[in-house]
Image (cartoon, one colour):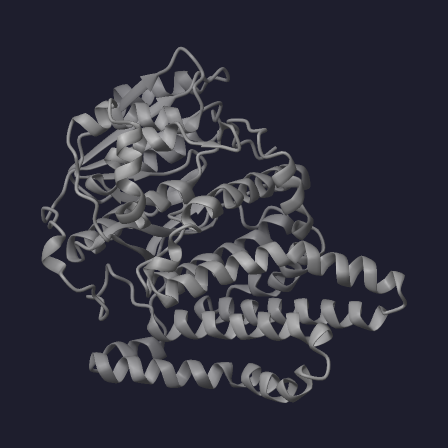
Length: 476
């Protein structure tokens, strides 16, 4: 298991932290630009040739611009909301009700057939530093001995365990837990995760200090990072998805996915929408995945979608018990809230996970994509830019890896692969900056190659099979 200890800040960060906030942010912008200077020079060198060969250079040019923009935003603008007050706050802060200084937290977990890891997960939940804590575990008809472990932990730790006699799926299991949850804050984790003792408390501190935050995401890395080549590649990829992608979105208060390893929501931001989450349907069929993105979307878009969702489920106790006003919530990311999750160690479960994620992406695109433009230019650019990259990926893979070789344009294939490796190296170097001494950065180009050569093809397959779905987190 990876150590839960947080690394001390490096000397550059310690010096920056001692500066006046305005000077600190200016210095960060300058340092970030200096680090990105080689990429900016490549961009400037290729820009004049773009008009001559837009089909050859256009895709790589756009990807490079997007990468530079995201890195600049993440490293020059992001602040951890659990460590300091954010500089950019919304107008009308008085419209957001403050949480108590020590709010009650309901920490929820759904589990099915996880006998090998469930005890470590529950003990890490119970070991959280936050004091006023209600832990609820729902067993969704496990058949592998998980229930025996939970009964023992229930007696030892004083947690609440709900034993379902019918398999209902993860979302419905978590909604069962919400029926008895009485916290001001509702937090979720996954059954294959281990949390740092201060992870939950840091998320709560961020929300107490910033009442405009309706939800925050923690920071996940691979628990089994050193097991196989696949786990090493995923570990460095996770770091970038949180430290760069979520950090960039967080600067606009619009994190688009509060991820399952540590997802923390204000009760009044999601409670009325839990029946919509459990009963979500897509393309005429129930959508069975837990869809972290979808629950996040209800927080981001409730000003525009909230009333209609509540009317649709007007008879649900989650709506009739208390009608919470629709608010312009922001969603943040807490880098210092560390959580480790087991990632697939072999090819087949890795592919099954990626297909689940692609299906969630597709479903969420039709919901969150319908209103994200209303949240402002920055959030819209990050969200729709990512959408365009994902949608274009299979088209670009076909063009460069199939069409080009078949038509004698092997140089185009080589150019594409070199661009993929360059992008992976850039993300790997960003990992190295944040994690000095950690050698996993060198696996990031391999993850970029895997994503472009293989994972890109999963989007059309996921769309074609989107009605299929199972409640499974198996990594074997």
